[in-house]
Amino acid sequence: MAQNSGSPQNAQAKTERSDESRRIPETRSGTSPARLADETTQGKTTIAASVVQKIAGIAAREISGVYAMGGGVSRAFGAIRDRIPGGSGTSSTSGVQVEVGEKQAAVDLDIVVEYGASIVDLARAVRRNVITAVERMTGLEVIEVNIAVNDIHLPDEDGEEAGQQTTSRVE
Image (cartoon, rainbow, N blue to C red; front, side, top):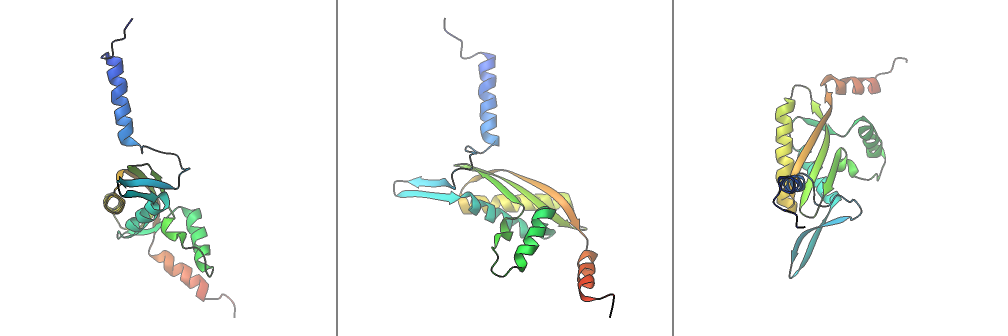
């Protein structure tokens, strides 16, 4: 008995699969350190996920109103790491997570916003800049950039921290 492949259920399943393939990267496994970006008769070009992560982090920081990247714990570790001579320079990837497939990428950002900045406008600008930078530099299609605002930086927070370090309560 032959099945009718044109049934509404089969059509719906095909539509769901095509929608899903547009929403998520084609390969989600983190086991491969590099992804195929270009393959020609003259050779292949692969891009490591850490490269996409670094590009996205730099592009996000370029936008005025982004004070810092990462959650409280990652910022604390970053501050400690910056004080160690010869410490690794991973601050450009703090607060950035990526999923990279063979042709697509998804980016998640954790940011701290300066007080007074419009969060909605800032998120749009960050998203646009990250998508433009990653697509231009890697050729990967960026299917989503999720932004989590974890904190707001107040202008007087810098002054208080500096004041506590320079003045002593006793002589």
